[in-house]
Length: 272
Picture 1 (cartoon, rainbow, N blue to C red):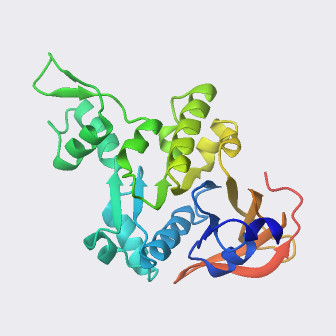
Picture 2 (cartoon, rainbow, N blue to C red):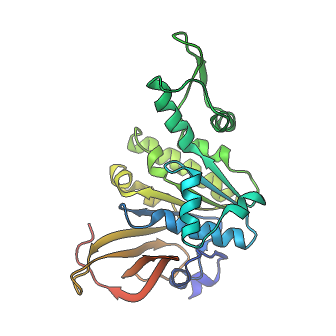
Picture 3 (cartoon, rainbow, N blue to C red):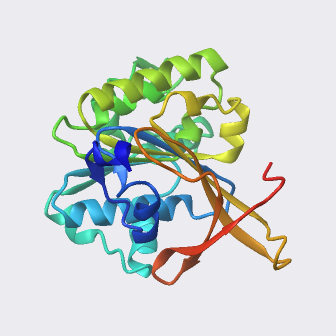
């Protein structure tokens, strides 16, 4: 495979997936991972983080939906224990969820002020803060897609953003494309390998335009297998530059040890 041999790869942590994309994700590039609920998008990201940290690479997980406790618990259940990597500084989790949830709670007068995690993120992202005259405290601007750049140290090797789609809502198509292009280009210029997890709802709402910004794309589906009559999980790889790829749909499963890529390829007429 001429193209794949030219580029250094970052193993995905899923052996059979590496075999299908020339040895792993292209180093220093952005990869878009999309799918409906139940397809294991987060688990794909956890595999990458575990494999990369195990190899001594410095990693960052930007979490916009789930708490670090839930993510670490899920990883441990799959045998992908990440706690030690946090302790030794190889893995950092940026809790963007904290700002989102805290903003809603303050707006509803459920809580006052900011916790330490929120304060750290506000400072890192340099979010606008204005004094609230109606009551004691501050308003803060919403975290932006481009703000993710400020959360990632220059010496980072691998990043997983889970879920990018949360930050896309409220943006028009041009705004989203411009901001995502900026994020992706800046991180690529720093030779940081990034997997952008994006839920299917946001992916469709933004007219699938994120595909154009990234170096590669992996799409996850849950569909009826016409040969077995059962609902099963499939993935396809419509785009992976500098890589010889097959456009066939590939069966996979979520097991007690994470993602398992099956050997069979399936021809499906409608995957919409």
